Amino acid sequence: MAVLGCRALLAASVLLLHGTGFHARPANISALKDKNPTGKDENEILPPGHLNGVKLELDGHLNKDFHQEVFLGKEMEEFEEDSEPRRNRKKLIDIFTKVDFNKDRSVSAKEMQRWIMEKTEEHFQEAVKENKLSFRAVDPDGDGHVTWDEYRVKFLASKGFNEKEVAEKIKNNEDLKVDEETQEVLESLKDRWFQADNPPADQLLNEQEFLSFLHPEHSRGMLKYMVKEIVRDLDQDGDKKLTLSEFISLPMGTVENQQAQSIDDDWVRERKKEFEEVIDANHDTIVTMDELEEYMDPMNEYNALNEARQMIAVADENQNHNLELEEILKYSEYFTGSKLMDYARNVHEEF
Image (tube, rainbow, N blue to C red; front, top):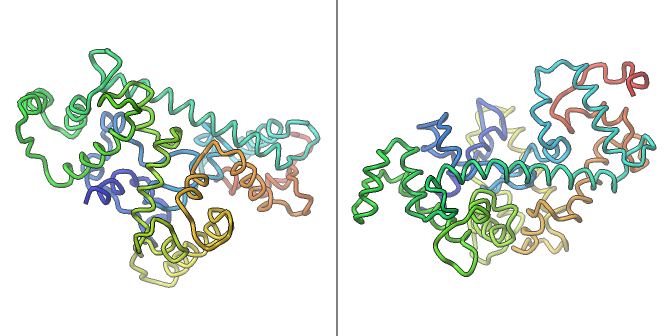
């Protein structure tokens, strides 16, 4: 039960994988989140449901926004669907000039790799900044350390429990009488909490360890833990490895019409391609924990180069293994999530 609770807690944002109305292979959505969808205090101290710049969601789904996250960094929000196309075009041209490090008006795989690493670091620095505020929220006495019980009090207070009553019951080792769903999430969080406690374990988290608790993707030890959890969820025969069939066998949604069936087929096709061409590094049809860990590591330079080559291949119409401005503008939806109309208009004048 704890594993399922962890998946429910950490996968909330993946509901958007296939839009609204019907969902092929949906992630489990936490009932706790449904009860308090706008709980700002809760979001400050809970591990985020989605990790920017990581290719796999924590429930095992592919991160559909990965390309945009590693291309735009914290500028993602600037490319909203209803934004003015001309403004977005100018912004994209500006980004192109930055990626084009040697200023030859063409982006190579090495230049794109360098850019991806910069944007990934940008996401990490944003996480560090947010972590300072989150840590302050759970460390009100400012002693630089937080116990599990201190965190538990703040978490339950964010769920609507009386903070003083909870603190008193925990102090006196009394039953908190929480509902089953809340207890599941607490158990999952507790496991993750103690995993983040670096040796020598003192059952306290400092600010750096709390960052690992909230953002396991930037801690090697927590990255292993994250991979272990994903494999445990997907591994059907208990061998601690993943086959292709295991990787594409997340629970299916209810297919109500042909459009839903097509989305479901696309989902399987995307996962199959990612498994065979990227995650299974040695192409032996089996993905080990080590392979999955390398794949999940956002600071892996080889992965960044591989991703750069993939991104270039999508838009490389002239097959020169580089990207020109016209190509990146034409395929703007892939890079930014924003489709630019009349992308070629006045390109050279603006550039």
